[in-house]
Length: 114
Image 1 (spheres, one colour):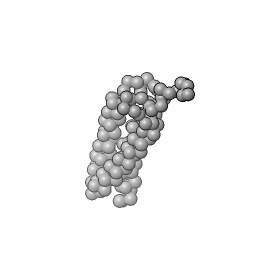
Image 2 (cartoon, one colour):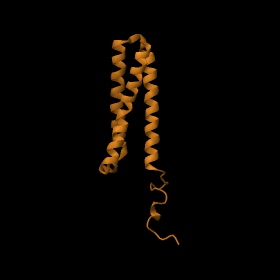
Image 3 (cartoon, one colour):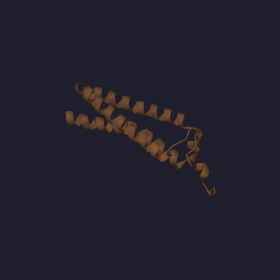
Image 4 (cartoon, helix red, strand yellow):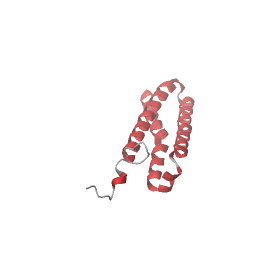
């Protein structure tokens, strides 16, 4: 039973982090979403993730209350790991950003450097 709860915790953690990856895909495919600002979209992702995680924890509490702590710890650990991968991926895709908000070297494109 502990193995089943652990596998369900892993699945719930990955599903809880899913909205972040869906939003990242939407932002890459639709530049208009990127221009509206990342804060509202990020908050929407956090809100949906919280709803999914709470629903998973309530389901575990209903079906296997004695293993709720194991489920919660595994679920939260996988969620944090997947969110860390998401942040790393978004930073890698966006690239370094200078203090003025522009990508370093972007103003040099097309200019003669001699």
